[in-house]
View 1 (spheres, rainbow, N blue to C red):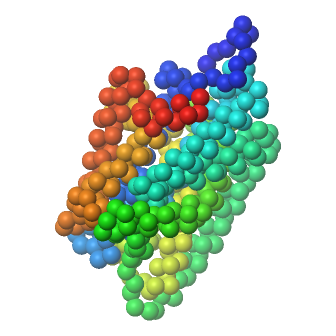
View 2: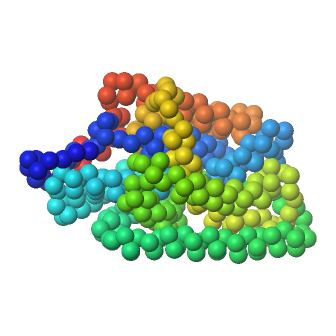
Length: 395
């Protein structure tokens, strides 16, 4: 992006145009919506979390294993990293146009306030497990206290992540001891029920969501440390120029994905029915899986940064998935509408046979449709309904 001194100072620039976008962030968002879909469709299908078959047979074992190893608690941290990254990109764009610090702050606060509104509507009408509202709250906090800090201050988040890596070693050690000392009856991995997903009427589900959403939103607020890592990465423009940061990306991909996979593996073995331990051990393994899952955020982001370096031509699949990434807000909301129509007990209720198969097939099908739809929109230079509305409200 180039500016000249002949441009007048303005309060803010409009939203980023297609030609100004970097490939890596869009490709990450578009591809990772598949994992978000696999997680959320399973919650709908099983009317609870983590959305796995409690008594798996045959290929259901594989589905449970893959979901617990690579998806659960590992997909949403990617979007948390990218949310922080996007905050800095937006602020940088406004400053490059000559906007004052106060004007930049107003734009960011306004955008995040509207995200809270989007989240409230989404959680009330469609799915209690909304993250948009939490993003809005965290975005406001980051705008007020983090965005304008210097490089030395932002090194704190790197130290925090190093501390969390050490902490996971202790959690892992306790989990290993729990396995060794497991003497009680074998305990299967079961789903914690969510009443709104099992309600027999839409009105009943809406009332349940109003009770479930505040607790869910409060429980995910600690992901601010993941958003902060995205802010740190964006200040270094790592994804805009992955070639200059190849060594860092390689180390983060190997280290972070190693932590998140190894941390999720024991619970995945239990969920697949290949390891049998007592209830106390299952609880310890669940904790290990959850805390190690946050490393999936930087791990997957770094992996995609390295993949982009190997892309020589923008093939149709890459362009289509990136198009979805540019419209990730619309894609995310489209998924919730799809789950409500396809899986809710009071609509089509397609949870016939194995719910594990149904959830996976529905998630993949909805993602493919959203990729195709986003690509069609990009061909017509249409941003997407949710993005269009948000930008009108903000700008």
